[in-house]
Image (cartoon, rainbow, N blue to C red; front, side, top):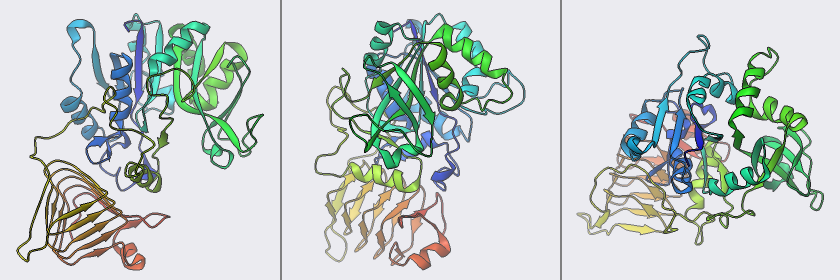
Length: 404
């Protein structure tokens, strides 16, 4: 789609995901045993035919840029295809990005150099599968200036989003960013229609509104707070209903904002359901990522004769389970699990060693951690809080490289 430029916003600090974001940007946080969060957005672009992609980075971007280099150097620039990481250029002064709209405004020179007629604006920190081509088709068909992807959520959850209303022709009639009292659907007062932070602009419209917004000293330079409400009054704004409209993966209807430790943990655990809401195994929509060349995972009996056991778990390559027990957990690459260790309801990142007799329950263990034999984590909240971050729901997070 040479007439379309895709911009992925991937510079967010993700402070609510600390300590997982202490040394990496939120889109670079591992997910599902082998992926990074940004892989889902980029995979959607790949399968939707979006092959001109700018990834706007900012906060602690080294891990993210390394992942883009190793896992996503797949497009052919000789055919006009690219995924390009764009760190802050400071072309509009010495400030960091001050909002979602401001991030693109600071890179307006890239838009001006493009011959694209449409701009797809995406976030790099959500978990979902979506056919953007179907949304772009609707945008063109309706001759919209802006199309906003939306979905329904329970009213009690809607205050965390931009809440919308639309008419029978899918034209957006109202938009309120994170309202204290969200509006509900006319035919269902328990549900609200919310923005997913996925936008398609006509290029001329986007350039115009960003220039106008930059001159407004009272603006927060955010799409939801400033840009969309203004366009509703002055332009043609349409809604695209995720999961209802035509698309190759519309049946999934799964979208998660993994902005907190608890929401991140829950989204990972969703993958372990007997029939997961999001199908990672769809043959024509594989999730792409970078994978180191480790041998297959295996179990081996320990010196005491215990057999390694995996029950309802996702296990990446390079894992060796020598007499341990793993239940309802996600284990990433190159993990060693030793004799009589038990791991339950937990997420283990790459390059972790779990010592003999350890007990891990409701944990997230970040990379490069060696857990001493007979260590207990997740069994005593008071003791855990002395050493680690413990979420509202009691998930214990051991940070990257932690030394016991």
